[in-house]
Image 1 (cartoon, rainbow, N blue to C red):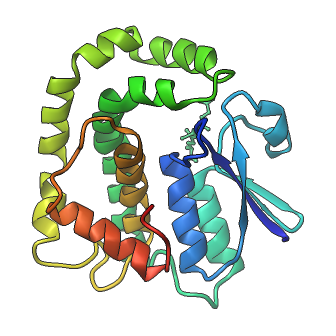
Image 2: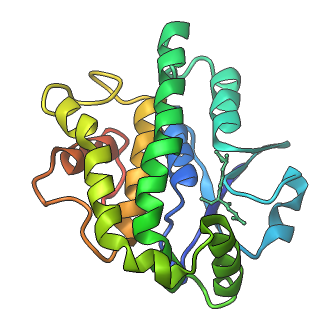
Length: 223
Ligand SMILES: N[C@@H](CCC(=O)N[C@@H](CS)C(=O)NCC(=O)O)C(=O)O
């Protein structure tokens, strides 16, 4: 297949990267077929041609594109006849607020809950790299971060309140159907719910219902 996505993998094959999830939803939104290439944190050489060290990396024919937002903009530009990821310019501007909110509030709220769980789920060759880089990032050991999990869960609950209220009166962040705003927030929550050993949300939570709606919009599996 001419379209390939390097997709972060856990030891058991679980694909948990929030940034890769957004791109997989964006590709589905644009009706584009692709295959994923499982990628480990320590496989920097495999993506060296992208000129940086993180996934997602999309190979689309001769084009190699990295960074989820740059990939979304690339897809919008390259496939203008497929459904828009952003809508009109004012809608895109609002999506950029959602992106900044997700990356500055939602991602940290989730990462403090799951970072030790992520470490446990990684392939053995990735674990020392992950521990070293994340402990430097958080300025604490994984064990110290995990000991604070109850407080992190409270912070997460407060952070997702606007989403719970939103989904009590509309189906998607973008309204009647999902767009890049939904893809971004979904990616974060998919990362959390796939990895956390502590359930993040009760079974009947409106956020889980919305996640199901996003997946079924694109004919993707919940498992
Ligand atoms: N700004 C980038 C962030 C991508 C990112 O942080 N990817 C993580 C996986 S979720 C990664 O590849 N990390 C590699 C590393 O930490 O060495 C995007 O939007 O794609």
